[in-house]
Image 1 (cartoon, rainbow over the protein chains, first blue to last red):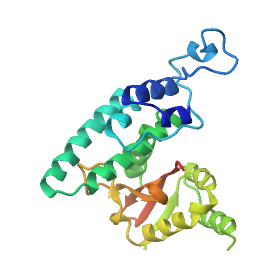
Image 2 (image 1 turned 90 degrees about the vertical axis):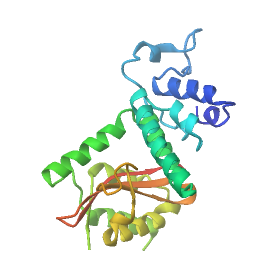
Image 3 (image 1 turned 60 degrees about the vertical axis):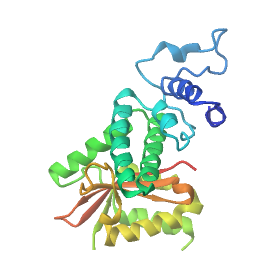
Image 4 (image 1 turned 180 degrees about the vertical axis):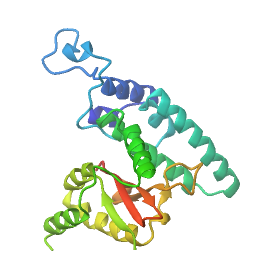
Length: 150
Length: 84
């Protein structure tokens, strides 16, 4: 899937590959003549792609990898940053937005729904003032030091 | 100085980072303890929102998404992602 996404010839091909990946419709090894095997039987439960590639930094390619709801959000933000770029003659905001949405597309391909779950977690922390699933920062620092050999 | 509060899921995400980008991620953590508001807002229509992001690594293939609780001087790490 990763190589195929990178080698897609045009945006429509990227879209097909992204959607197949999101809904678990990529032909699986050992599948029957139809090529889709058991994965096609459960379109309501999207299967994550364990090794996706992010879409290229192109608005149409990114959009093609998003759900309709996320694509609508992308469109809204795209309009905002384009208008700012027109005024400022500075494309930094456009590049930043493309990077952000490439990350969201990548995240959603690996774990569908994870973007909204992350935002829900942020809202919960903001509302309650605490994260019930917090981990000690010291443990993370120790892990980094250990891996860096410091 | 802001206190960093990782989500449990973030600990696993950091453990999965390649060794060659760990130093860059550690630098981001240092910055977040001092000037977390310098990160880009998560939504361009709300530039003062407390949910922000910081890209790192070659090609900005890494990102940290976090929430600032200003009154508590805390930075809650929500996501660490790397696509390299």
